[in-house]
Length: 341
Image (spheres, rainbow, N blue to C red):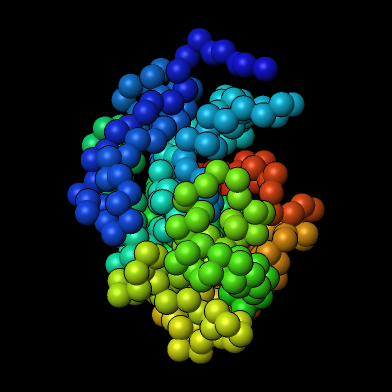
């Protein structure tokens, strides 16, 4: 079913990124993404609005979330209109970021293998949105949120750029790497062996259209390595893998580089930033296929020991088909924004 509306609820922003120019993967530096405008935006021309930056998960990009239509599901922009018209949500702009890479995503980190995606979001996108729209251009009216790799990116940017983002919501965020990534390591090892090595796998992946189900897991492991253990001296994919491709044994030196990027360990390096947040909300499904409900429990344990305030919730569901949780995160943002007035 195709929905129509008398008002255009979003605008498309085109941004020529400086920090992504010349990135090693050859990904475009010219990006476009939708910005959802609340129903009152054009009705109250003197009003300024808070902004939420939404980060898509691995293999996704911003427009997929806002614009996609599914049978029997209400599109996200229609849910947002309804919730804001009913005052259940504070009127706010939502920026649906395009952080896609040739390998599926960059975890919204700066990496020599992928490009400066943290700077792209925190500096270039925020500046462009504040210049083009009537925003409340202060960190306490600016939230960062996402699911899966997007949730990871939200946590990473909240930790490293607290002067930009004052509220953070992370749904099923990549965390507790020792639990969440291990099953994908096995799938990657099998795919690499069948292809004749990881470089041959990459070349075969992009050469063909018919792909084995395990291939996406294998590509994701390489994409994560580009973010956590980049190495431009490695041909084709520019990263050190965290295991031996013959035996599957962990390469401890590389694995430690990965663990340093795990929010469970990284939070101890950013205590002041996390304590400064006006909201830190974690949620995950109890049937998450990557066990990120336990990843969040592990992260919550560390946050508690560090004296960092947070909210956490578990719900019935897995990793997929949980876009309705966006509403819950925005409700938390609304509650906190209204408490700050």
